[in-house]
Image 1: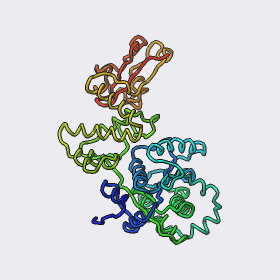
Image 2: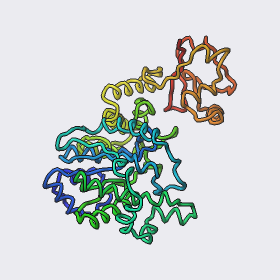
Image 3: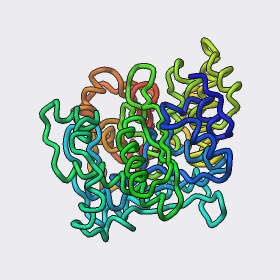
Image 4: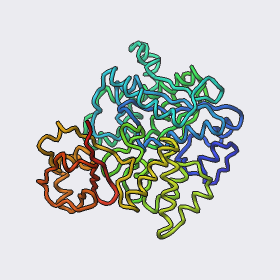
Length: 417
């Protein structure tokens, strides 16, 4: 694409690799050039944290604010009660209102690290779509909003079509989701003057629905922009690791493990990830990404430091880096490793190495822990563990022990109380 943007925001989006598609490049660019643009992304409250897969969206809103726009983070307190069926094989489990509120509180903690909230012209807004969805009158909604939607067109969207093509059930509850999401955009435009929705490229159909509905009902000009759905160089979905989702809340993924995730980035991804997930100058991102051999490791540390600083703060990033140096270069235990604390009562006459590996988070099950040992991947204080029946007593824990799964994942086990 050869379009040359006039606004700072569109320039950043295109230069750093955020832009997958846009409903009207020139129209959005012109609006951004004229004044403060309000743009939003919706997030359903299905967990107590967002994970790395959502980070490209969060960074989009951060750049909007940094370039003079006003970001809106829309919590799906209403839509979470339905569940987004997009590209899912089965219906999401339904959550209680209390669970949804708890999840929203956890997600707020993530956003507050990246965006400045307040009353100023470019301060971010945190909204909840339960504000307008919970009080809807069903018959009025059908009459005023439902008539603008063609079932034929809704069935043609890839997110729905792929589910039906696999002959997997799509409930009427889920089918309503795209109407509710479109209605969100209408209400945000009507109540808050929001003119652009951002989202991953899998949300294109939902975004276009909202634009179409708002134009029909309010005759307002609004826009949609999508970011690419990221996979790592080996084809894996961004945000997943060997031990599960890479959460952005420190109580669900320790800053050390978060730092280590980025330190383990594949060589081919370093330059791209520096542009997307840090605020380093683009030329510097390109220079670091082009390093070869052992030098690329220095670039990965820059990446890990910068992303962890944004998410958890400079002190947490420095502690994680120091622990990695201690663990990997000096063979020590490190102060910032994930730690399992056990009381003498829990240990009793002894606790099995299998239990320790599972409880410290290095394996998801006893079966996986046994496989780790049989594959020579488990170590205790850097010595190979070969006996799946090994028992650890309180005496062995007189000083903390370091458990390792492979070369990159470690945890401390220590006696407390």
